[in-house]
Image (cartoon, rainbow, N blue to C red; front, side, top):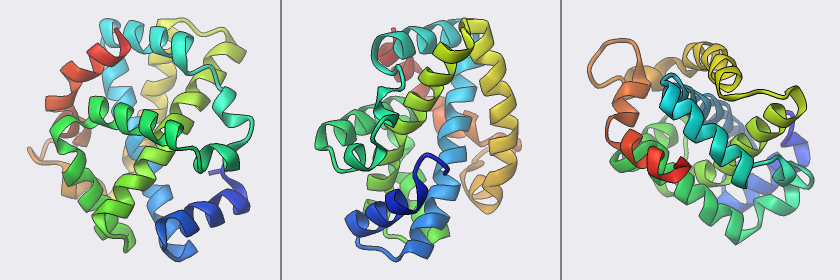
Length: 186
């Protein structure tokens, strides 16, 4: 949220054609969901290694240098769509619908929002990796801690997405998408 600031939030609202209150509510739900999904993937040694390689290759944090410019960049949004396809797989539409419903956005706007945020989340993770000198195990530990916090922040959206009722929505979201994520980060 801090990386977006007031100007970034206004810009997202304008791009989505939504009011700032709904946009902020959606961002507040989308960020923990994305972090939780990445944390689920990094829970396995193979997933952590694949994520680390992706961070080193494509997500070093430069995307955070001018967030407002990045938010309007179609290439970055396309990158975000690719990240979402790999992280969420076939459940991307369901997640967008749930996010939109919880925040008062239509599913298309919620999907567009997630595509804007995914590269920023990956960039933030890449920057943290670089600054703290984290290896794959360090990334996994960091995301494990962040995932616990993110899951608790999702509240009602987590319940909506928890298809199997086990209290962990990421296994439901990532069941189909996890194999694809390995392809993205491989």
